[in-house]
Length: 462
Image 1 (cartoon, rainbow, N blue to C red):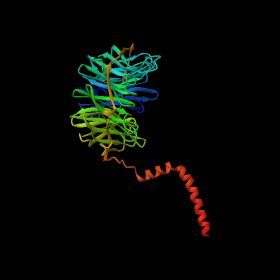
Image 2 (cartoon, rainbow, N blue to C red):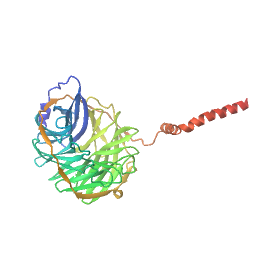
Image 3 (cartoon, helix red, strand yellow):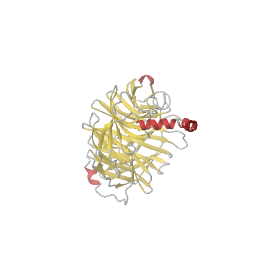
Image 4 (cartoon, rainbow, N blue to C red):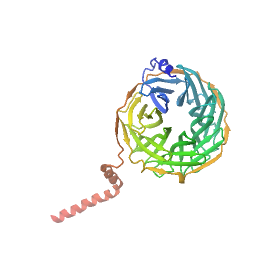
């Protein structure tokens, strides 16, 4: 199926210098591939980027699209022998418009911009009704708020319809869309139909139902997975006692739900979730001492079971989690490159590789021994509300694009992996520094006073 990828881009990149890469997302495919998407910047031009690599880290395809405006890809999928990617393009239809493109055999089959005239973009794409469903955000001209956006196109990018979910003066965001059989599910965050502040929403478009889930503070849903006869949604929550924000997942089955969170004193969250072998695997982030580490946990339907943190010299941003046969695969963005780490089912690292023009000298995988101590059950403090789905039709302009595919020569290399245990006790040196810093006013008084006392004692002795 992917033979065209390996053969169509044998030509070297025409760029004289390496472009600056930015990765905004990825998909781990069961076929043994990882597809990453983002942007490539060369000079003043920023173009949508796609990179495909196999399970051993070999780059089998890498290219960007010249679309006549600044843009980026935010999601993609492989259908038959075609790659379909979505994102945004600037200054084509309004300030920002939805970008959708189809690539086959090393050539652009179709590309289109869809916009309301102000700001629109797509963050997710799924196969739907012999075409594709695109989910994202729309803010029409003169609107003060944004709505969750659903766009339906045919197999060649032709517009079938566009719809928005949200209320006036409130913001709503669609992060992902999933097609389960004939059912289309949107996942995101809502301020319009919330229980408290912003809440997670699950929208069954065909069924016309809108489910919101949240606690007493802000809750954001970023990904979901179908599990049995229910849905698992994962994201970040401020309605948890662990820290400033905690990572959470919720199991929603009909009118019942269970919510679990995990967190440390700073910021934590999940970016993606994958169900395999009767277990949930979730990838996210954990900020420790101002540095962003990768977080990978294994859980069941009744709570967290194990976890590791991934640390490099720089920050790691979580992109995706999936599986290659028995291997669990976590993907991160690292300093303009892609970092892929493969684990076994017990979260033991097997190998790691980096794709891009930079690579971490070492990847540290640190076992988290305190998973249970940092886990919380939030079911009793959260609420679930079901209501009818208010959908508004959106008028979008559709403009075909004369897009050109430009191959890139992006290298990859193995990344050395070190294992260890997450150190959660604060070192004595840091405790002393913290005590000194928090008592500077007292020290300013105590030091001169001590000098005076010593001077008096010495004078009396003499």
